Image (cartoon, rainbow over all chains, first blue to last red; front, side, top):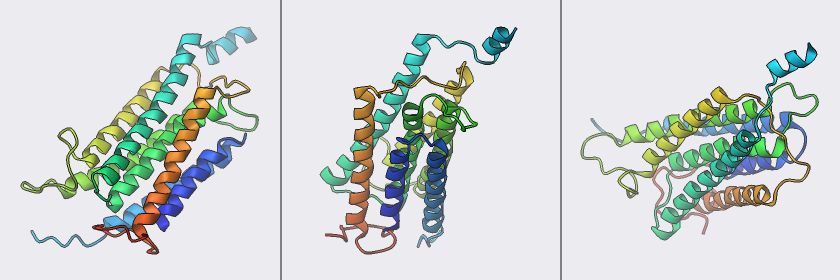
Length: 52
Length: 203
């Protein structure tokens, strides 16, 4: 669900480019990037279940 | 005098260079679309479900293609916008590619141990996450070179967008929505994607 929401954010960022408000696009881009990195940090800290 | 200063700060860009730059933005977006469609082919035709890291790499690729889309759609910098459009567009792409590179490097390192078969089937000798790493490095290099040789950080956008640009943007938007639906099908009602997906939880 969170991943789908991020894809929706990316689509909204693309839609926002059609308006003459570059800062709106930049803001949506920044929010999307932060959400992606938070999702990455969630998955990257998962236990790997490996034994070396 | 003022003309001299103006020319020095904003040297006139040749028409071929601007045409090349606009063409490159299209190639960039369409190239990312081809990669994402290829990932769909592996997902649906070969029946290999993408793991969470694969999905995050798709997100970063889309994010990196939003930069050229921004250049195409915004064109000449607008009143009240203090930055250059091309600088912002390629800056967005570089940031997204750095994020994507971190994700794909993480996945490459997960399977770097000798004897590890890797995740999914290899395509042209390399796994998809290794190809993703190549794509992100290419994005950073191309963005850097473009900014390096860019004589003027603005682009003249026509009042009406060319039909091919419009088609490119529509295709790109459709692929983003298709990814959203595919992820919904995979995760089902769960908040996060399963670490090792084996079936579609939303069907």
